[in-house]
Image (cartoon, rainbow, N blue to C red; front, side, top):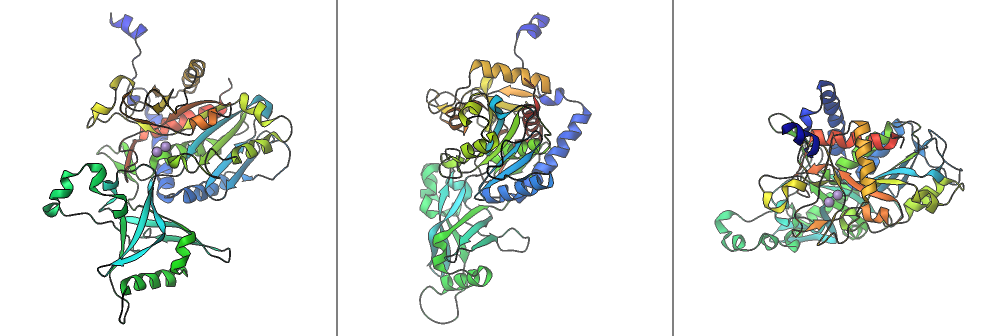
Length: 461
Ligand code: MN
Ligand code: MN
């Protein structure tokens, strides 16, 4: 009977039972690189800047406009306003045969400073924030935070701001109530326990010498002025993001897990980036997208609903075929994270169809919520191709969905890629504590996601 089961049943296996010592070393090597990237890339802008550095080191050059079709083996990139990045390696086949695109996002949930953020209350200075993306607000109190971003000045120059990253640089915090006095707070729902307007960063406490109101605010403003040359009005044209100050660390006594902020979706962004940086003259042109604004609906000029991608593909086609023709023959891996089965919260997932840590890269045929609404639903034929590709590439993978049918759900850029007539499927790393200030992934799954991304670029079918 066991033989019959082996023959007929679908039985996913723990990845560590499927790989040998050599691959374990490759996994460790890859994860070390990834952790360094994640540590350096705390915002979408930094993720792009770091990616450009790595790309240039690997021989990529800025795309020249109207330079004709991309040549086999040619490596180009386009930095879209410092917030999203498009890369390509020319394939042996022309763009009329389509291309392989892998699309991840590099923006993550965070607290954006408001456009007029600084105020004083009870001789303490605060910075008001407006959260970005889906967060559980209570998780952002009483943890160390840093500020990263830019301030655009009226003379056209831009000031880069990083506060709290260096070891001896001060950090910021949002305070929470002591349990002794939290009786009322504790009776509220978790959604209401900490409210959006209460997510204010404690920014200082020493008053400016002299008399009058707002002396602490003035002292903080003068520190910012000294350090960055800005005045209060300059906040209006700033993008300053408060992000968790945790270092990226190995987790678990066996060091098998990775903990860090912003793994959704920099874990997949780095996987496809590392893959394209090691891709030489693939069969079909390889395209890598690090997109912005996914967490708020892929909006704007740096999000996947924007038109920069069409323009980029038009440049790669170089007049040889239409963008639409190229799209229709192309394949997209929407590289985004998925939920991992959490034994602490098994009730929100259906075990048989949920990704498990160390079972490899998770494919989602569909995402969405309430009856697949808002999903990209990949075709059976495409899923079949992916099964063949993973088998060819030795990729350990699993099929999964995002939570129980009636529990909720979520979306990725997949739908926006498919809207363009590109065959698209979601594939990415299963995550624990997704969207928390400190997210957990498994090294094995990170590595297998990289391996999938590498295989997809070079696959000959
Ligand atoms: Mn994501
Ligand atoms: Mn997300």
